[in-house]
Length: 142
Ligand code: RB5
Image (tube, rainbow, N blue to C red; front, top):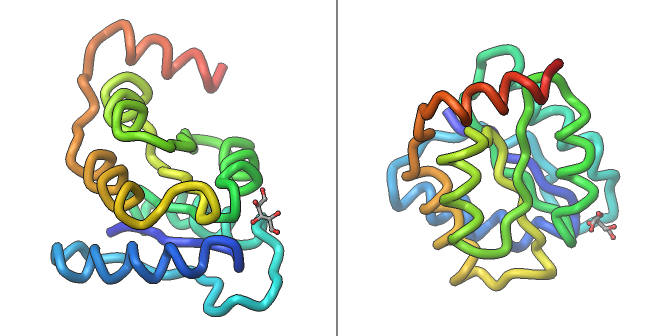
């Protein structure tokens, strides 16, 4: 199960992401927001990350205007490795190397075409499992 969250700056792109996930048959839980009225991105970042921490969801996608505020918030939460991606190379690398469990996107930065490719790359790339990467990930939480 995928956890989804956005603020007003990410709302339009999140609609595209949800449509794409529906087409792919990927289950998700939407933690809001649910419109373009101004809201506070930390609220939604924390809801998504809590669902991952609680084991309700395995991964998450967070979208705000830039992707920055929502990823800063997510990365303050234990066990969360959020990657702000603007290209598929980084989306692939962060899964292979960092075992990132949250993808952050900027709704005012990337267009829907690129964003959906980034989403697919993030969801379809497994963690490499390499010892050096496991070691480095364990050092993040130290
Ligand atoms: C909202 O205007 C904007 O600040 C927010 O979406 C995000 O870009 C913050 O990092």
